[in-house]
Length: 68
Image 1 (cartoon, rainbow, N blue to C red):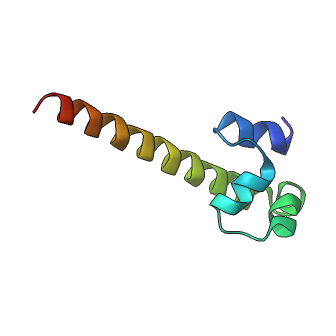
Image 2: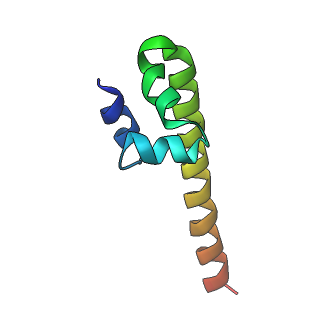
């Protein structure tokens, strides 16, 4: 799977958007799939977790607001 496909699979529109979310220099982030694949994978997993966590929190808040 290409790096761009991986970032899209975890919910980002582009490598650039993922780099911004990671607060990482784009040039470094673009090189990592080749030069530091483990770091790239771990950061993607962390970003995916943050996205999922934020979505769950939103959903939970909307459910609890509706039940009050």
